[in-house]
Length: 85
Image 1: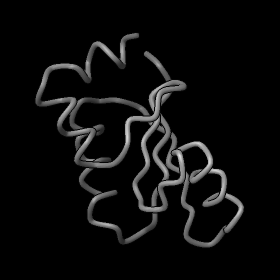
Image 2 (image 1 turned 30 degrees about the vertical axis):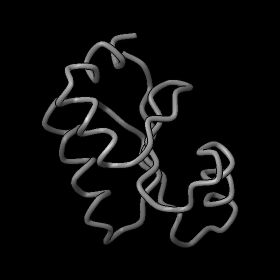
Image 3 (image 1 turned 180 degrees about the vertical axis):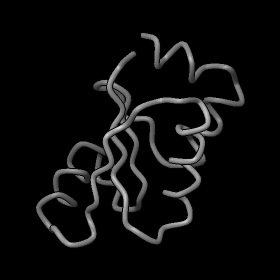
Image 4 (image 1 turned 180 degrees about the horizontal axis):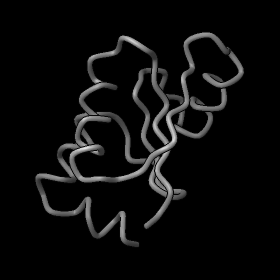
């Protein structure tokens, strides 16, 4: 399984929903809280093509986008193959 990174902030409902989906699918992920570290947010924005909102989700080197993008991939049946790589 490819590594998954989720850039978050603590009380973001979209972050919680994205993590809930990954937990439901038993997908391990690394959560990176950008709320108190401007350098982490800058790194996230550089990797995410300038996107500033959280969550920003990466599967391997692929930028997935946010919560809606993650759920859309799952709904289309494309998330599991992407995770398996």
